[in-house]
Image (cartoon, rainbow, N blue to C red; front, side, top):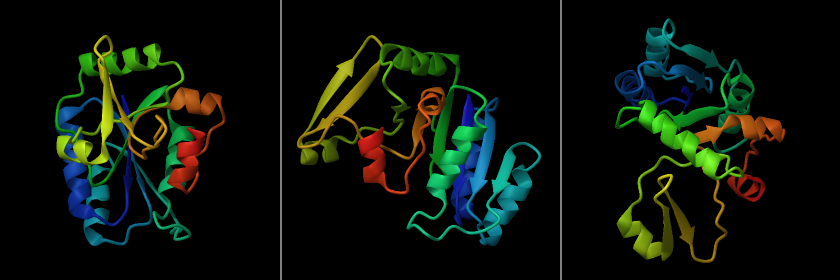
Length: 187
């Protein structure tokens, strides 16, 4: 599986993120997109991993948006991807279990079962927050996945992280907008 990590000025987090990939997805093809970090710890971490992973640093900081160059880096990852499915994560995230063939098989099974889907979110379901938001949970045990359906919202919600079906987005000439509401409407 390909893993794309999006980084900006959080060295300790980036180190933890990359160490978790080494532990739980040692055979992954990893690319780190750094949004022109100036944090010395980020620069050290990037240098430590440059022989093992592809490191792409923006030469000019993108400060036109409150998330900087995140979305432009995500668009670049879409272009650079060598496989149809990739994990997009940010530097403050980590893998908490092994990404083995069984996990990848579940991911492929999901995308096969839901041919219009372009993203599988990999976060945890928080029961306490779910009850506050009055969400309905639908489970498809055949795949296995669950769907969160918040009241008052559509069933489609964009997240800048998760397993992305790069092939489908590229097929449709999709590009990430700088605004999550835009991406919600277009995904």
